[in-house]
Image (cartoon, rainbow, N blue to C red; front, side, top):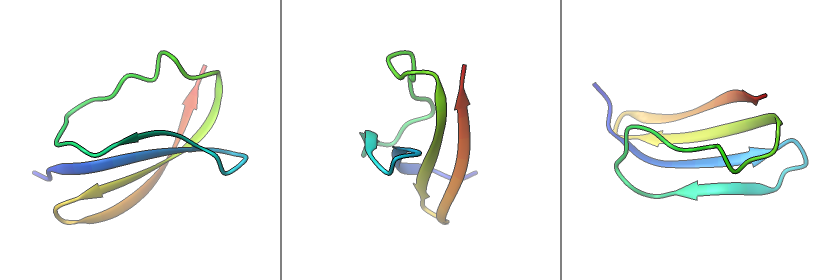
Length: 55
């Protein structure tokens, strides 16, 4: 198991739309517009980037 330490969401224009620096298990994206986002996720075992599609 990995512990998430931070999540940063970036839109496709390169703007940071969400930043959370907390130990968490979920985030709410209900206030974001529909579209594609990149989630930069930092954990205790490394960093990852994932594409997220909000419909």
